[in-house]
Each structure stands twice: as C-alpha cells, then as structure tokens.
Image (cartoon, rainbow, N blue to C red; front, side, top):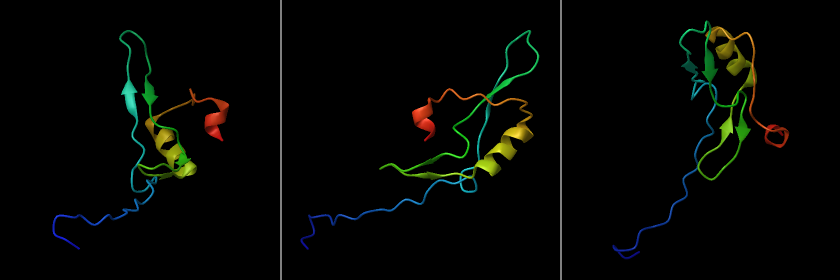
Length: 83
C-alpha cells in the first residue's frame, strides 16, 4: 500500500455498561425547598448506535439511584423510547 494512503480500519467499541460507566446523578437543589432532584440517563439503558452502544444493568442502576436517596423515579421518556 502506498505511504500516502491510509488503511481503513473498523473499530468495534465495547458497549457501555453499569460497571464500565457507573451511573452519575446530577443533583439539583432549589433554594427554600427541602429535598432535591437527581438527573441522570435512563437506568438499564440498552441501545446500539454508530457511536457506541449501551448494555446497562437495570438492577445495578436502580441501586445507585436508591443510594442517592431517591424515594420516587420519574421518566420523561415516551413509551416508544422504552421499547
């Protein structure tokens, strides 16, 4: 192969998991209001894409949310996104 031609290679990315990429929760507090809201990606996310894939463990992610102190879980995702 000529020196000025780069060989095309395909990089296979390992899926992001609950172990490799622990769930991060961004706390949001409001002055004058007790409690806080935690924002995070969808627990247990399983999705493939060109930029990488997700293969998260729902139970492990829910334990992280519980250790954050959450007493409720609310999603803003639509039904078709959860399938």
